[in-house]
Image (cartoon, rainbow, N blue to C red; front, side, top):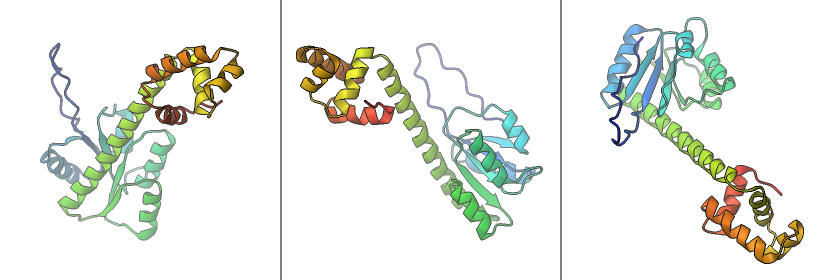
Length: 220
């Protein structure tokens, strides 16, 4: 089994490098694993190679943009069943399938379950590189969305209970005067709270705040 390339720790005060994308290959064919490793490394991708599903599940997956190149036929478990297992255990890996014995029902099942591509052996190197590139773009997008959601949640948690209450009312469409009547405050006090929560949430407009409330699931 080959692990991802080891990278030196950054010096104190040095800018932190963005981790290179990693292609995780799961196939019991040693020659194919090595060939794919060479192919992916030739375009600057890191690679992690596994011969069995058990090896992959026991490994610590790299915290970097990544995808899984997965053979349909594996010892002990089929690639399609492994795809189902990953989905059930919330392991978020865009998958590129490869097989020497593909058929339409198999392809349909894989794609309906979220596979990025389904390549039949022997495949062209460029087809594999294109499929992996598309999968990594998907994973990058998911990571960026999760990071944005996490940052938004942190901003929301920094609001006071009163500010959260007013945010819920304002984003539900109530005017300041109506909010004041609802919470038992003066209108000027509501305006102050509203200004503070807009600043804390980094919302430039009410529309921004409404979108944030929707993303957070804030309801009145």
